[in-house]
Image 1 (cartoon, helix red, strand yellow):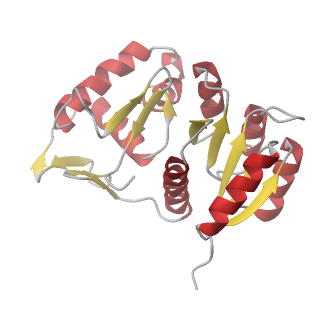
Image 2 (image 1 turned 45 degrees about the vertical axis):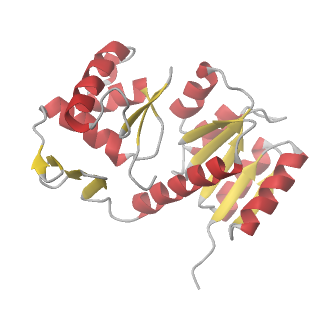
Length: 232
């Protein structure tokens, strides 16, 4: 029998904990809960869950600090749920290591979809990274550094390829502007978001059927970008 994925929910609202426990267990997830940040950190270390659902507003320590402390020792996917919908809060959480962010109130089906994406990302991270990444007609072969669409080769500049490979290598995850800039260009490009936008536009022109309605490289307004695979 396949082992149930284990979800740790850290939230100080009793009704949220009860609701998520019920919903996730009905979907065959194993669920642990914590109502304080320190308790959540201890459970994460003791139980090593497959994914953590984290509220930012906790009674003892801020959820962003919880993200930072988790990332000191683990790459467990972190999905933030919070009433704090300001861009600065989302960027801060993502920059400290969160993988995704949902603002309360949220739809159950969207939450479950984000959890599935996080679990897939975790399984790839634990195993050998994929050599070939595909999304619909787009195929990226990381071993040969080639890209094709509908079987036809797509010519990319070295920088365009590095950007695409980084985005696709973190498929489903929201990546902030500065995270992308640091990993593709270097730390000295911190804050150069317009530079990044130029290259994203170039990639969309080459890869998207309709660059004005992008489906592969989606914008998270004010935050960054998300590469979406066909089944994400």
